[in-house]
Length: 176
Image (tube, rainbow, N blue to C red):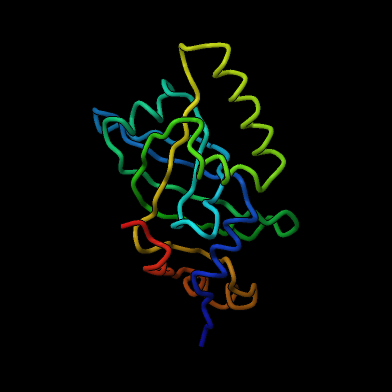
Protein backbone atom coordinates (compact mmCIF):
# COMPACT_ATOMS: atom_id res chain seq x y z
CA UNK A 1 0.00 0.00 0.00
CA UNK A 2 1.29 3.46 -0.96
CA UNK A 3 1.17 6.23 1.62
CA UNK A 4 0.43 9.32 -0.50
CA UNK A 5 1.41 12.77 0.77
CA UNK A 6 -1.27 15.32 1.61
CA UNK A 7 -1.75 18.92 0.61
CA UNK A 8 0.68 20.32 3.22
CA UNK A 9 3.56 18.31 1.76
CA UNK A 10 2.68 19.26 -1.82
CA UNK A 11 2.37 22.93 -0.91
CA UNK A 12 5.83 22.76 0.69
CA UNK A 13 7.25 21.30 -2.55
CA UNK A 14 5.52 24.00 -4.64
CA UNK A 15 7.07 26.67 -2.38
CA UNK A 16 10.56 25.24 -2.98
CA UNK A 17 10.32 25.98 -6.71
CA UNK A 18 9.89 29.22 -8.64
CA UNK A 19 9.40 27.97 -12.22
CA UNK A 20 6.44 26.40 -13.95
CA UNK A 21 4.61 26.21 -17.26
CA UNK A 22 1.41 28.19 -17.76
CA UNK A 23 -1.14 27.01 -20.30
CA UNK A 24 -3.75 29.41 -21.74
CA UNK A 25 -6.20 29.33 -24.64
CA UNK A 26 -6.69 32.11 -27.18
CA UNK A 27 -9.99 33.29 -28.66
CA UNK A 28 -9.65 30.76 -31.53
CA UNK A 29 -9.19 27.86 -29.07
CA UNK A 30 -5.47 27.70 -29.80
CA UNK A 31 -3.37 26.43 -26.90
CA UNK A 32 -0.41 28.47 -25.69
CA UNK A 33 2.17 27.37 -23.10
CA UNK A 34 4.96 29.41 -21.63
CA UNK A 35 7.56 28.94 -18.93
CA UNK A 36 7.34 31.53 -16.16
CA UNK A 37 8.55 32.21 -12.63
CA UNK A 38 5.99 32.21 -9.84
CA UNK A 39 5.58 33.10 -6.19
CA UNK A 40 3.18 31.45 -3.76
CA UNK A 41 0.68 33.38 -1.65
CA UNK A 42 1.75 33.87 1.97
CA UNK A 43 0.41 31.17 4.30
CA UNK A 44 -2.09 33.59 5.87
CA UNK A 45 -3.78 34.03 2.47
CA UNK A 46 -5.80 31.60 0.33
CA UNK A 47 -3.53 29.30 -1.67
CA UNK A 48 -2.66 30.82 -5.06
CA UNK A 49 0.29 31.35 -7.36
CA UNK A 50 1.35 34.80 -8.54
CA UNK A 51 3.12 35.36 -11.86
CA UNK A 52 4.70 38.61 -13.02
CA UNK A 53 4.33 39.43 -16.72
CA UNK A 54 3.47 42.18 -19.20
CA UNK A 55 -0.06 43.51 -19.63
CA UNK A 56 0.08 42.95 -23.38
CA UNK A 57 1.89 39.61 -23.51
CA UNK A 58 0.05 36.77 -25.25
CA UNK A 59 -0.68 34.92 -22.00
CA UNK A 60 -2.26 38.05 -20.50
CA UNK A 61 -4.33 38.78 -23.60
CA UNK A 62 -5.53 35.15 -23.60
CA UNK A 63 -6.52 35.36 -19.92
CA UNK A 64 -8.55 38.52 -20.58
CA UNK A 65 -10.65 36.48 -23.01
CA UNK A 66 -10.60 33.14 -21.17
CA UNK A 67 -9.48 32.94 -17.52
CA UNK A 68 -9.28 29.11 -17.50
CA UNK A 69 -5.64 28.03 -17.29
CA UNK A 70 -3.43 25.09 -16.47
CA UNK A 71 -0.15 25.18 -14.59
CA UNK A 72 2.57 22.54 -14.32
CA UNK A 73 5.65 22.53 -12.11
CA UNK A 74 8.40 20.13 -13.23
CA UNK A 75 10.64 18.30 -10.77
CA UNK A 76 13.50 17.01 -12.95
CA UNK A 77 15.87 14.23 -11.93
CA UNK A 78 19.33 15.70 -12.29
CA UNK A 79 21.20 12.48 -11.53
CA UNK A 80 18.80 9.78 -12.69
CA UNK A 81 17.97 11.11 -16.14
CA UNK A 82 16.31 7.85 -17.22
CA UNK A 83 13.49 8.47 -14.69
CA UNK A 84 10.64 10.65 -16.01
CA UNK A 85 10.46 14.09 -14.41
CA UNK A 86 8.04 14.31 -11.53
CA UNK A 87 5.37 16.97 -11.83
CA UNK A 88 2.68 18.89 -9.96
CA UNK A 89 -0.13 20.21 -12.14
CA UNK A 90 -3.53 21.78 -11.83
CA UNK A 91 -6.25 23.65 -13.64
CA UNK A 92 -7.59 26.91 -12.33
CA UNK A 93 -8.72 30.47 -12.91
CA UNK A 94 -6.46 33.43 -13.61
CA UNK A 95 -6.99 37.05 -12.70
CA UNK A 96 -5.01 40.07 -13.84
CA UNK A 97 -3.86 42.29 -10.95
CA UNK A 98 -1.89 45.54 -10.79
CA UNK A 99 1.85 45.30 -10.20
CA UNK A 100 1.44 46.88 -6.76
CA UNK A 101 -1.07 44.31 -5.45
CA UNK A 102 0.07 43.81 -1.83
CA UNK A 103 -0.45 40.03 -1.63
CA UNK A 104 1.26 39.49 -4.98
CA UNK A 105 4.20 41.63 -3.91
CA UNK A 106 4.47 39.66 -0.65
CA UNK A 107 4.48 36.41 -2.64
CA UNK A 108 7.58 37.62 -4.48
CA UNK A 109 9.55 38.34 -1.29
CA UNK A 110 10.40 34.70 -0.51
CA UNK A 111 13.17 34.12 -3.08
CA UNK A 112 16.06 36.20 -4.38
CA UNK A 113 15.22 35.69 -8.09
CA UNK A 114 11.61 36.71 -7.53
CA UNK A 115 12.66 39.88 -5.67
CA UNK A 116 15.03 40.79 -8.52
CA UNK A 117 12.29 40.14 -11.08
CA UNK A 118 9.94 42.43 -9.15
CA UNK A 119 12.57 45.20 -8.94
CA UNK A 120 13.07 45.03 -12.72
CA UNK A 121 9.30 45.16 -13.30
CA UNK A 122 8.94 48.19 -11.02
CA UNK A 123 11.65 50.02 -13.01
CA UNK A 124 9.92 49.07 -16.25
CA UNK A 125 6.59 50.37 -14.92
CA UNK A 126 8.18 53.79 -14.34
CA UNK A 127 9.88 53.89 -17.76
CA UNK A 128 7.06 52.77 -20.07
CA UNK A 129 3.31 52.75 -20.37
CA UNK A 130 3.22 50.58 -23.53
CA UNK A 131 3.48 47.22 -21.81
CA UNK A 132 3.15 47.80 -18.11
CA UNK A 133 3.90 44.90 -15.77
CA UNK A 134 0.98 43.10 -14.11
CA UNK A 135 0.55 40.15 -11.81
CA UNK A 136 -1.49 37.10 -12.68
CA UNK A 137 -3.09 35.31 -9.76
CA UNK A 138 -3.68 31.63 -10.49
CA UNK A 139 -6.20 30.01 -8.17
CA UNK A 140 -6.28 26.24 -8.55
CA UNK A 141 -9.43 24.20 -8.62
CA UNK A 142 -10.06 21.95 -5.64
CA UNK A 143 -7.75 19.13 -6.85
CA UNK A 144 -4.02 19.33 -7.53
CA UNK A 145 -2.66 16.43 -9.58
CA UNK A 146 0.74 14.97 -8.79
CA UNK A 147 3.09 12.57 -10.51
CA UNK A 148 5.90 11.11 -8.42
CA UNK A 149 6.44 13.90 -5.89
CA UNK A 150 6.64 12.33 -2.42
CA UNK A 151 6.67 8.75 -3.75
CA UNK A 152 9.74 6.56 -3.34
CA UNK A 153 11.74 5.60 -6.39
CA UNK A 154 11.33 1.93 -5.43
CA UNK A 155 7.52 2.32 -5.55
CA UNK A 156 7.74 4.09 -8.90
CA UNK A 157 9.93 1.36 -10.37
CA UNK A 158 7.47 -1.36 -9.24
CA UNK A 159 4.56 0.32 -10.97
CA UNK A 160 4.82 3.76 -12.59
CA UNK A 161 1.05 4.26 -12.23
CA UNK A 162 1.39 4.27 -8.42
CA UNK A 163 3.13 7.64 -8.78
CA UNK A 164 0.01 9.42 -10.02
CA UNK A 165 -2.36 10.81 -7.39
CA UNK A 166 -4.06 14.05 -6.41
CA UNK A 167 -4.49 16.15 -3.29
CA UNK A 168 -7.32 18.44 -2.28
CA UNK A 169 -6.75 22.06 -1.37
CA UNK A 170 -8.31 22.43 2.11
CA UNK A 171 -11.43 24.57 2.25
CA UNK A 172 -9.80 27.08 4.58
CA UNK A 173 -7.01 27.63 1.99
CA UNK A 174 -9.36 28.10 -1.03
CA UNK A 175 -10.74 31.42 -2.17
CA UNK A 176 -13.97 30.02 -3.66
